[in-house]
Image 1 (tube, one colour):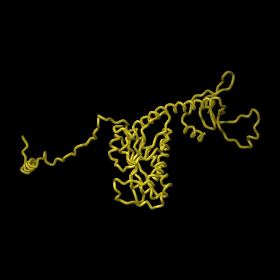
Image 2 (cartoon, one colour):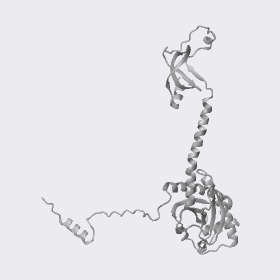
Image 3 (tube, helix red, strand yellow):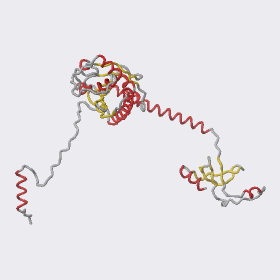
Image 4 (cartoon, helix red, strand yellow):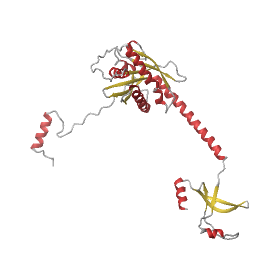
Length: 338
């Protein structure tokens, strides 16, 4: 028999249709959004590489945090905000005519004519640091114009600060490769100079710099070709370092194989009074509470490594090994038990 709708169900259905909706009481599910991928300019670096750079610049943020605190005699916090791959024109389009960039160069054997590394520090936080260098409190105007032009003295102090920040950047790569970066110059108008190709891939690292009375950003623009050369160098050196380590380990084992090591065969254990030991004579028998076919323990450095049975080999008393104790914890427990 067909199901008959009640009047209330009919009214609910009509009201939903008049409202342009679908079924009544149906929850609208939000549309799932997917990130857009530009197939005309595919990504050059994997997530693992970007994660690796994130770890490197987290280390760099800690290094410059200590350096800035020492230079300015104040409390400062530097945190890594993001590591993103993009095209250089995306970075350069955000620059204005009054923007000042610091240019640095990588020193790595076998690599020449590299595109420079670019540093950009927001104007308020840079002026605050300059003020502290001159003995001030670091207070700056909150409404600085976007086209603020640095004076010659400020440019000179800007260079001194950037020289300090660039000189320690190589230390953050020490876990992977030995690098050094050299400060080049300050570029007061980068929009008129093509430092990097507009379509070249770069990795933009954003650091947040926080003072008690000021906050800003440090942006580090790393050319993609330079990073590719560094990663290639890392991949080449890692197998070599493993080979060297293996060679050294084999050399160590060669020395150990020729060393002398005392092995003690233990037939059994018992306790005697000092008076009984004093009265022992040749031919006396000591009861070890051990069966004649019981195991003989072989100890190295006081620890049980093997057990076996007494026997004769070429008219010499010998011990035939039956079991090896591979578990170190078991060796220690056996020592306590015996």
